[in-house]
Image (cartoon, rainbow over all chains, first blue to last red; front, side):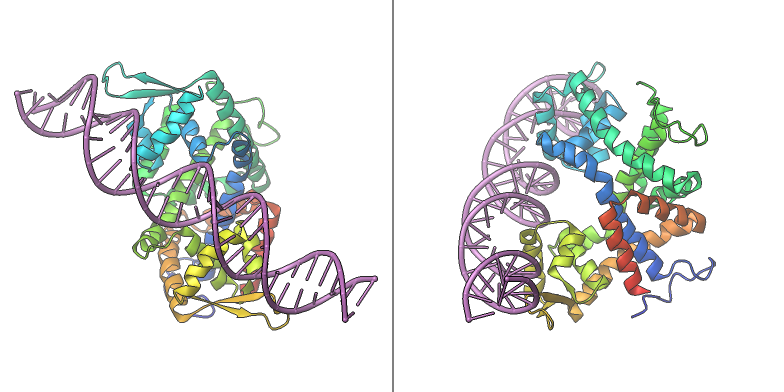
Length: 170
Length: 170
DNA sequence: CTTGGAATGTCAACAAGGCTGACATAAGTT
DNA sequence: AACTTATGTCAGCCTTGTTGACATTCCAAG
């Protein structure tokens, strides 16, 4: 137990693969990298007294304009009360517009306003810049692997959302 | 603006690399994957009315037994008041021990108790299982790339911590 | 030896953003 | 007409972050 190598995880792969130490490194890499991943937008958000929750809403409304509240809920995995609080401030501040649905009038279709678009862009520019630098220094093959592992790490229902968003932009 | 391809990011790399769309996919992959990454430990923690903050403390005390509060602070990037609250409950619950430093008696060296070790193991078993499955289905080369991109995404000071922890276990 | 500063602990107050539960309303569906 | 769905909203609670203030301990420099 002290060397961190368990009996499990030594299957048909190469022998130095999937040791507990390898897995721990991956876990720590995720933790530290996620901090970097959110650091730049967080700084911008702090200036405006918004939080990560606002960023997430802006991002996914931008990614799928006209999305409904319910869809956003299942993407974000929070309660409607939580989302509503964030959405309310964004609407009040004129960053998001909520239109009654045309086919189903119970639904609200969410859109970014010009100002919302501007902030979303500012945030995602910062985040993309970090991503771009990481991609550049790691190289194209690394990026392939990066995505492959991340996709395998997702819960099935979230992977569905991930793929749907991708398709919607093709 | 609508196709998500900006003028930037089309440097000396291959032409279909580093478009805004590629970068957005990476951003969303990080978001959804991180949710999966924390999902299993979160469920265990909820049972015990602990949170992610407790998990992080347990993880890094386990990774570097005898670490000081200050070191933990710079790894976790929170205030000492925040950390202290979490640490206090872990000490009160008998999961962590705090020993006055031998060389510098102002410092506290932190260790997991047997119970602390047990919980840490339970949490990291769950997290490693997810990681292992992701690694397996993505393959060894993908894992290399995965780590490479994550390391490039870290802030410099955090990358230092990341590498130090790794070295400490070699 | 005294003084300054560093490491730590602790108290109080506050905010963001999760959560649950309850209830209202409008509008599809059967 | 009754049921269900989508949404909004109120109230209250929890975790985990923050700042500011202050005490203690103790190393190190003068």
